[in-house]
Image (cartoon, rainbow, N blue to C red; front, side, top):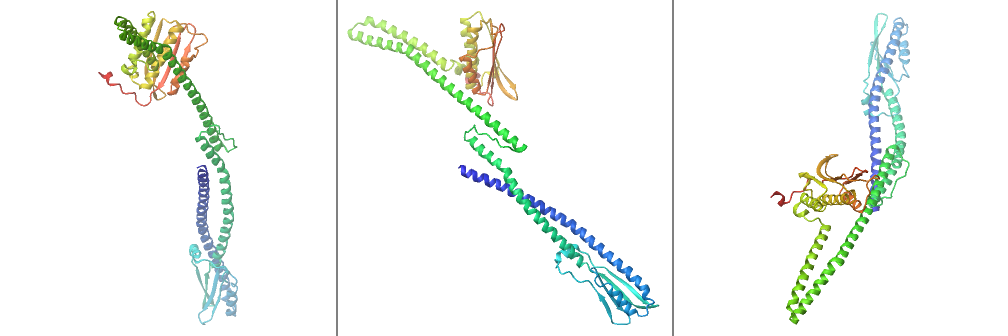
Length: 466
């Protein structure tokens, strides 16, 4: 599985590199197309300007010579010399056509040896221009000189430059893409290590950390990963501690139940067995008068067993909580202490929205109030105990707030977390809540718990609507 994951990671990294190289190649191609378009437009204008300039120079030259030809003694020779003077021109084709003879004088440029693609010639698209200049000898027309532009050589020169530019761009782009490929691969290497670390983290190895020196962008990712791993490690350690405490509490509870069964239930069961044996023996012996005493002893033992079982069930689950609801269960608890400590003023306020929050939350609330009242009555010597339970909004979520406060003597050093309060704090934390304790000398003791509601509050049982 890890091997397959590694292959997928390398494939993803390679794919990203190829995508980046493809993007760079696309940018190069777009730049080349844009640059080629601009270069072609400039080349077309440049060739046209070159042809116009060459044609203008030819006009000036021929017009100047035409003035001399008007008085020439040997016009034919002078015309040949004039036409021959354009031999070697790269851009002009010159010819003379006489009116009184079929002879034609013509010179033109030598075509470039490098072939130029026709599509490139059409792309430059510079049509040839023609200039016709009449030649007169004396007052008589002698013929005309026709000058025609030939842009082929200029286009060939631009094509050669364009090819050189393509070669330079290719020589530049290939090493650039190779460098990008290597650089991106090097840059992605920390991400591969991060993926491996995440895999280890997902498998429960919370000790994994990344210590690479990275660019600022990846350094923030590394720091967040290390912070998350540290938080998960702390949570795992806390869960282990809670599990150990839970196992310890369960074992202690089992030990207490076993002791109670052995010390309280066992003797009564043994006594019932003895009395039952005696009844059987008396019946066999015909001593019916002695049976009544043993029957009364059995009835008394059963009564004691019922009381003991009720106390044990009360430790496992508050009596009346499931049957009558949280409000009545806490009211019964308050009444229990009122009968035993009538000098204390008990003030109970439970909001209707907080009376049906589900079995788990209701049981937790009951245990909080039970433990807080036990501590207040045993240690604080109060004259008033206030119990307030309500539902409120905190940080955008609904929580049940439980507050138990007394006006007893308090403690100058602050509240001390005994086993009862410590177990209660762990119980509240286990369902996502928080427990706060406050105490000061002469100002009593205050316990406040905030328990988040999971979704909607529980639906009240059928008996609560009767």
